[in-house]
Amino acid sequence: MNAFELGLTQKLEERSRRDLLRRLPPPSPSIDFSSNDYLGLARSRELEERISRATKGLRFARTHSFRHNDVHDLEKKLKRAEGKKFIAAESVYSMDGDACPIEEVARLAEKYEAIIVWDEAHSTGLFGARGEGVALTKKLDVPVRIYTFGKAMGVHGACVAGSETMKNFLINHARPFIYSTALPPHSVKAIDCAFDYLKENNQLQIQLRKRIDYFLQKAKWENKIPSQSSVQCLIFGKEVRAKAAQLMKVGLDCRPVLSPSVPQGKERIRLCLHAFNTEEEIDLLVQAIG
Image 1: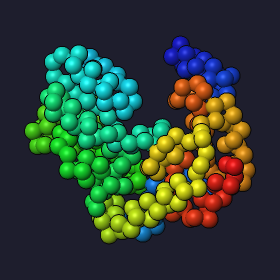
Image 2: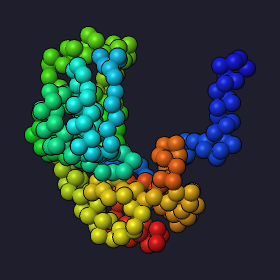
Image 3: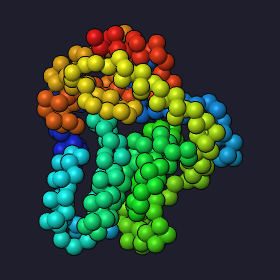
């Protein structure tokens, strides 16, 4: 074993001793409350068949972190920042499920001549008739938008969207793009199919919203992080493993999120609600959490 492999092995053994070693689990027969397959497209036979038919620059930037969703703190940082300013934020945050106040961020961006880099990872497919995400649905001028085609869209890949000028700039200056292999035609066709399928099946968004609202009517736990999205989190701290195991025993696929992914003491069960979850399944979930 060479020094490189030895170093990797030691890191893995250290994580194993701390009982933090991750493994890829086999497909679970349990009721899904853990995946990001919000609309159920990743399991859609119809979309799978459609795909099958269809397939015959900021390197030296100085960063200033602002407090989570705190636009007052963001403004303080913008006042201090020098040079060209960029604000990076997400539409829906993956670990809390809460939403960024994009209208207020856009107002500050205009005031301080900053460029918003907006991550639509957990809103792609869920907002807008075409699944275009939060920024375009709210008709906001967001120059740089990042979309992912996993999660709700059920396929693979991601993109940066913006003006033709921005696209040409990235083609010429974005090192990760320049030295990356392009998506194969199969993947591009799969993405097209997923968005076409969503346009024809907008009821999935409505159905998901109904499931979220139903869950929120039932969810009265004090340890729940406030969220109106598909992502709902319950803080259990050190007891999170035991709680997740308890839920798995009754057939509920609910996964713990451990430190260092979240701060110590904030370990949680991250629930993902889906269009395909039934009210009966949500009732079982609520009853099992207690």
